[in-house]
Length: 152
Ligand code: HEM
Image (tube, rainbow, N blue to C red):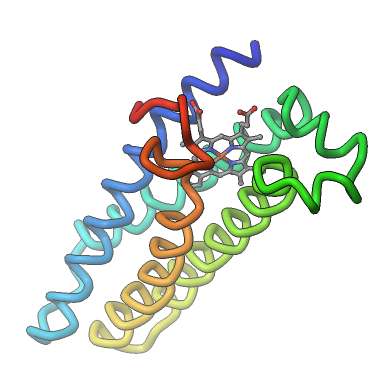
């Protein structure tokens, strides 16, 4: 189960990233060009939210079955001094949860905003920050933390 979920979580990063980036870019251009917040914009932010929440659920399951997280949790004090264990036990989960909270807030504030410009603005700000946090805390293969991990 662990390997299957890890592959799924790894692959779904792309779906989440594509949707969040698309929602962000559409709202950025919509905000700048003062265009309407269309049904497509609404769908993009909804599917971004769903994909982020699916990652959250799979991530939580992985957190409790992952051998590397278990090793970190077995000795939290020691894990804090070891960058790889610290990344998997604390950094990845906390930054990703914060990013997903921002995306959730962005969608809900945008839904409640009074006009289209404000709807776009909420998506730009909250999705933009959430996206940045996700991008810096993915264990990319070119990072030391992602050594040996794949692109998919
Ligand atoms: C949009 C949010 C997230 C993205 C894009 C993301 C991305 C990734 C990626 C790319 C990997 C490496 C997969 C591999 O090596 O094949 C990974 C692993 C992992 N993620 Fe996430 N993640 C997200 C959110 C979360 C959350 C919220 C949690 C915890 C609640 C979490 C827990 C984990 C765990 C435990 C691992 C596996 C560590 C291991 O055993 O190697 N992730 N994640």
